[in-house]
Amino acid sequence: MSEGGPLPVAVLGATGRMGRLVIAEILDAPDLALVAALASPGGAAVGADAGTLAGRAACGVGVVRPGPDAFGEARVVIDFSLPEALSAALPHLGDRALVSGTTGLPPELVARRDAHAARGPLLAAANFSLGVHLLMDLVRRAASALPHADLEIVETHHRKKIDAPSGTALALAEAAEAGRSAPLERRFGRSGRTGERAPTEIGVHALRGGDVVGEHTVWFLDDGERVSLTHAASSRVTFARGAVRAARWIGHRPPGRYDMAQVLGLSDRIG
Ligand SMILES: NC(=O)c1ccc[n+]([C@@H]2O[C@H](COP(=O)([O-])OP(=O)(O)OC[C@H]3O[C@@H](n4cnc5c(N)ncnc54)[C@H](OP(=O)(O)O)[C@@H]3O)[C@@H](O)[C@H]2O)c1
Image (cartoon, rainbow, N blue to C red; front, side, top):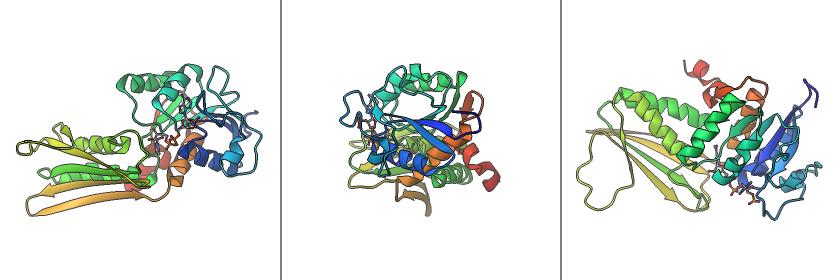
């Protein structure tokens, strides 16, 4: 693929809920070329056309198992898979750019993923929507402006989500902590004789059920008043579009760590 031609992209997790939407976005974009689609080693869709799986016309790219040569000509890999899939893929990325949305990574895998930034551009985000990144900024500001309010986060996701709390809820907790001078102790749910709530706590609670794409509310509970800030995603397409936008943005950048606020130009908008 020549410099200046379409940016060659591979998708890890090509058969999943997110991967199929990402592939549809890539196939619809004239400046991007899908060159590889990877699923699990024993996946039923190996060999199937990635375009057909994504609800588009056949594109001639068959779904393959992960392996040393599976990323082919790709300059960017978009990952929405499982922690074990990302772990197995990291040694084969070379200097390609990585856009990673997989959540629920154990700390050692987060460290290995982050080390990729020494070899290629890296953008990892628990949430690729514009609105959630705006919410993070609002939460940081509100946590600072309401220094005595008790902070609680409630997230709701569909019944098939396999990790809790969501990566976005944890990122919102970090945003709240950034707005407070003192670190906050995270309480994941409450039961039994909890004792009184400490002002240094931040509660993080997960609801699971139905087909909810993703909803996050951050509560600021003070004496005599309360504020709540909510983001609700009504379609996964918002995440797929954000990831594809990120892929375009980091595709030709030097190695290093980048974030969605840079991609979305949020610092300019929020001021
Ligand atoms: N950052 C964000 O904005 C955002 C938004 C939504 C979701 N997510 C996260 O993205 C991830 C995927 O979500 P999803 O709903 O799309 O999941 P999903 O529908 O279960 O899809 C998982 C994908 O990973 C593949 N896979 C599983 N094991 C693999 C392995 N060992 N090697 C290679 N591929 C493997 C599956 O292939 P088979 O079909 O062959 O099993 C499938 O394509 C989750 O961690 C989720 O929390 C992030």
